[in-house]
Length: 144
Image (cartoon, rainbow, N blue to C red; front, side, top):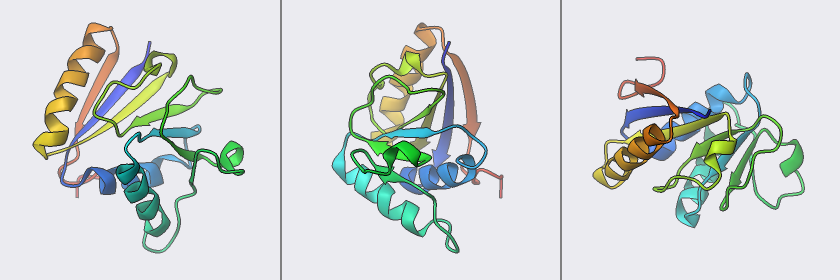
């Protein structure tokens, strides 16, 4: 059964996603970022090049020759996982084939355009029997 983490209360969804990705990639399995909207994928790509301020979060876009060896891959179409991948959803819809992933992450901002569709996704995940975990990240991931 898929475990779904809802991180809610972010002031900026993309900045929070970049923060989560930077904190997560070192100790996790490979992460697939589902970002079907080109503008969101581009914003995240740019953010990961500068986050953290003194480093770089290793990532690439789908189709890159380095995609197979890069820990974070941004995709426009989510397919079934390869090995033990985690899926980060930056879509306003339930990702296709999400149930094949052991772990799905949702970053939800306080913006109604993001928050309201996330409530519907939460309901759909619950109906499908997913394990749901909620965390308020209004103060950041470390609570500061």
